[in-house]
Length: 334
Image 1 (tube, helix red, strand yellow):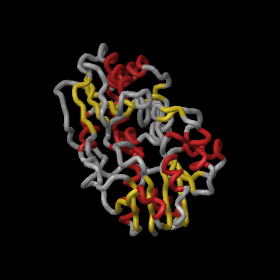
Image 2 (tube, helix red, strand yellow):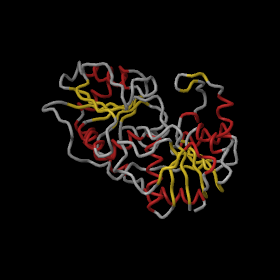
Image 3 (cartoon, rainbow, N blue to C red):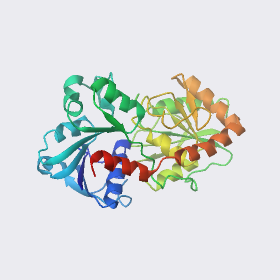
Image 4 (tube, rainbow, N blue to C red):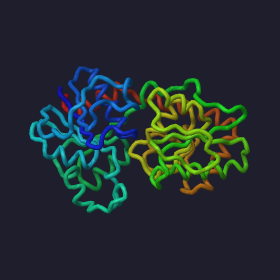
């Protein structure tokens, strides 16, 4: 089967792009003829050497692309896919934020939401989501049947030797930019507050580019490649998830697979991953004070920490790429 994944913004270091190339690579290795439609002429450095099994196709030529299946991820890709006339089945992978119920602002620009969502959510396409909450939104708010396809992190996400260690220090990992969405600065502020009770606490951080302003941040990685990520997760005692919402919290899943427990606000995108006090910690209040208290509590409770460190890995082992791909192939008509 010939399959094309549309990625009009290019393969940038973010969870949605990582999910696209994971699916493309794995479907290609299962014998399908897979393409990623993108402005990229070659795989970017953060992916090069780690993903194969698919080909790149110039997104500017999307109207001429012929395939059995086209998969759009996001509203911009959906608008293009609506104009593709040489595709038998059109599928929409609900992984990006335009599936939310209220936002009228995207990337700093005010948008006409109804017009923006007309193409992707008003079609007779196949819809599938990578988290329960987005599946429910598509079905309840847009009246479309939506399949649930949960995908595990890559097999390379497992406990390994750390890339950073500081003798006698407790390490928190933060990630993402400093926008209100990802909350990198919120994480740094919470860790700085917790440090008043835990003087040996430090924070390491990775993101696409922006770094939180805080003396507690002792190490930062920009655009880390896929080999480095498990080493980063394994360098931390805990990972802090301060994002306001995620389609599927890839960082949470990857950290758990690497044996690093996660403390997260009770935000959308973690419900399929974190069971409070069993596989991680959920903080109900969305503020730095309560997050700091959770950090102090977990790092002071050796028994709870040891349990979470074991249980988070066990929980992620229930996710199977074989099951995920078989489900996706059935949905796409393979």
